Structure formats: structure tokens, C-alpha cells
Length: 97
Image (cartoon, rainbow, N blue to C red; front, side, top):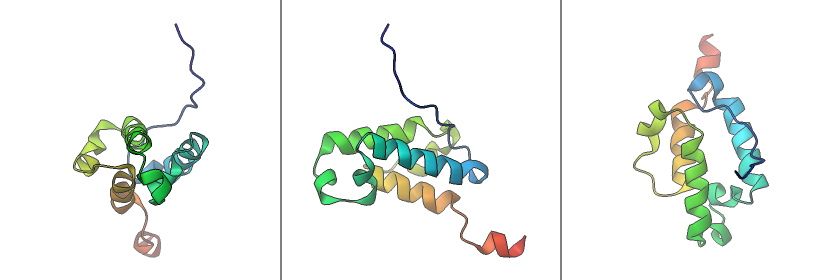
């Protein structure tokens, strides 16, 4: 059986682990030369194979309960942006706490 050297990243569950997931996920995508698919870099977005791979990695590393947030997206940037809207602390919560 083939051995993989993929790092272990905790799946995105919700707001409680979004910041650590985002940090680790960005590092993984950068390591695999896929981060440009999330930032919208034209050099990457023109490469459909990379865009598909980046989106798939994001999907694999979120809890299935969160599929609802990104199931209508077609690329990595769309998926990333939707998850950011759903889970990133806008600051209002920090003010209230």
C-alpha cells in the first residue's frame, strides 16, 4: 500500500476551530502550490485541474455538516469565501463577550 505524507489537519467543525483550521488549511494549500486557487490568482484559476484539486481538499477537510455552506460552489475561492462568511468572527462577537 502506498504511504502518504499528508499532514493531519482537524476537520472544520464550526466557529470553535475555524481560525486554526484556516491557518493549517492555508499552509497545506501553499505547500501543494494550490493557494493561488483560493486567492483568485489568474495563473491558478485558469488551471482547472488545480482549481478542482484545491476545492476537493477543502471539502475533504470540513465536517460533513458544513457541506451545506459550499455545495453550490464550483471552485476553491467560492468554497473558501463561503466558509469565511459562515465562520469567521466579524468582531461583533468579540465586542459582546
